[in-house]
Amino acid sequence: MPYHFEKGPTWQVFDTFFSGADRIKAKLFVLESLWTEPRFTGFVDSFAKLPANLPLPTAPYGSGIITLADLIEHANAHWFGLPTKIGGNPASSDGYDEYDPTSSTATGFWKNWRGDAERVVRMAFIRAIEVSLGLRHPAGAYDPLTPPAQPPIPPPTSGDAITHLYADHEDPSGSPYAPTLDDAASQTSAQLATRFARNWPIEFWWLCGPRYFQASVTWRRKRLPGDPTAQNPEPPSGQPRSASDDSGRVNVVFITPGATSHVIFHDLEHPPENPPVGPRHPGGAEHAIDPARSEDRFGSWIVGHRFTESDHGGSHEPSHAGECPCPIQQWKGTGRVVTVQPRYEDGGVLLHTPY
Image 1 (cartoon, one colour):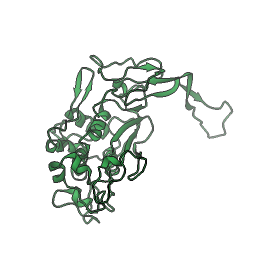
Image 2 (tube, rainbow, N blue to C red):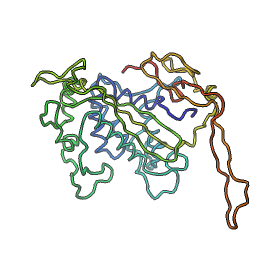
Image 3 (cartoon, rainbow, N blue to C red):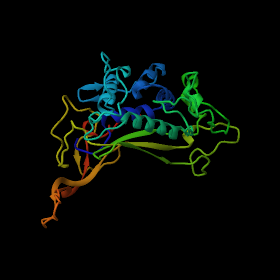
Image 4 (tube, rainbow, N blue to C red):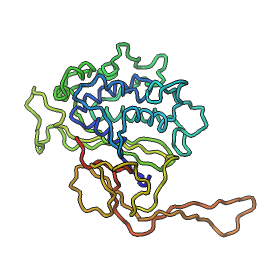
């Protein structure tokens, strides 16, 4: 892992899924799954319900392809540290048991950290989808993993958690509207867009290296509905408007400890010495020093000292009786400050994407 702020193949899969032309359908199906399925990766089963023109999210990597089965195993085993059921299939969401809070071992492949990573990721996705569609988070909603016996909002009995939890949602015209999975299956994306306050793309990043595991959900509204300077001003009264008239973007950053299997490279001017097997992806960024161009639709650069070195600090003064001071490890940047464009396989972005 040569760079600490990454995207790479995994998160660009979710970028495509939640930012493409049919993203509103994907959001509704995934949101339903996040509230009802025992495993976060259970939303993969919803893909069979999506229209045929919505492609399944797979990502190229080297000479191979990251499949949905690969993502299921990677998320449950490495990110969430879930134990595999006896005889369970690691490529299936049903093949894993729940997180054990009494465990004293590190969770997944995170270095010196343990906790319920699956619950953090699940709630970050729920919140991001709610922001992107303008949905009000249901007050007192049950925990999707451990619902109480008598929650303020009881679990859905009809199997449609979307309608059950977001019944107080109002569409852009101000009319009460409860989004349903039937709508997502039967209506076009353009028809659905008129029923929601907005339909912002969702972008995912990964910041690796801190001592904790959490998620940051931020958003930026680019234009308010009815803004006279907008290209598409508010339509006449009584006429529906498209959710695209309220444009913005949601950003999710997962902040995690370092992974035990990753090696940190401290020389930014030289590409990593662990190239993937096979040719690099043709649409991926190349490792570049001090790049000049920024015409591509997406980009990822890092600015910093060329080298990051470890320095053990401490005092040479005699300590008081009974004290055993330990050296303090510090990190310092040396060498010239450079701008580096990481390649796709090492956390960069695809320069040419379909969305």
